[in-house]
Length: 181
Image (cartoon, rainbow, N blue to C red):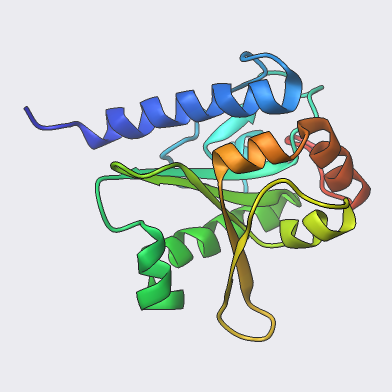
């Protein structure tokens, strides 16, 4: 029986929202799969719902623009190694960064390929790892040019190695806005 990719993606976004909510806020109900998920983002629509995951209440500080991808193949780490900035992962992350910039949010690309762990791709958290003391998660860095460096970690390692509240405070100090601000 064929798998409906939209249903698979929506289910993945709901699971990821609950997982991130538990990590950042200590419950599974503060975040949800955005109504705008899967829709084309424009400045005039869904401003408070940039990305695939949003906070239930605007009073929740959620400074992320999260794009989730769950693919059968083609989005493994090897695609970054082989294709570099021409890979689908890099292109998805670039679009995620552009969406995040419109609302001054921190971009995260969370992705999974069948039979592989969930991974997260980001930029400045490499600095967070060094500024916040010894980290308990490992990072891989991909340097495409002197200024173009992205970091990769297992989502489970990031969740286990960094306290959600510490990360939220760090991003607030760095000036990232919350959804809807």
